[in-house]
Length: 180
Image (tube, rainbow, N blue to C red; front, side):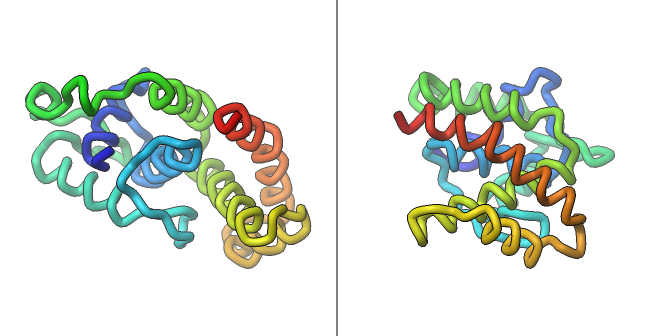
């Protein structure tokens, strides 16, 4: 799915019709993609965790075109949101089926997290998936060491351990339900 179509629908799917800023947007889209939604966005590990230039560009385009506005660190519907929706979101590219289920689950898992919590959870999840893809499994000590190498200046060892436990309890079980 085209990134701009996705983020417009993601914003509309939130209960408050708002997203808590760029970090949240990046991580919400990341988790949706990681859980199986086909989104035109590539992610790499960056300063605040998984980052996609395509998502950043789509948001910027939405803001320039007043489809979305950013005010006080919050992303909301702009004055041209409904016009964009009516002109571009059709039955062919609208959320449905498994995509709807994944988006709703991600919003449920992450919607109330702070920017710092979603950053460390997404980083830990990203590194765990990377380690599993490379080595067939992700050893706890290895994941924690890599998260500390990436985030040690921003997060304490305890915060990283807590994030690892949240990933094991919240995110990993969800990805297994989708893949089965």
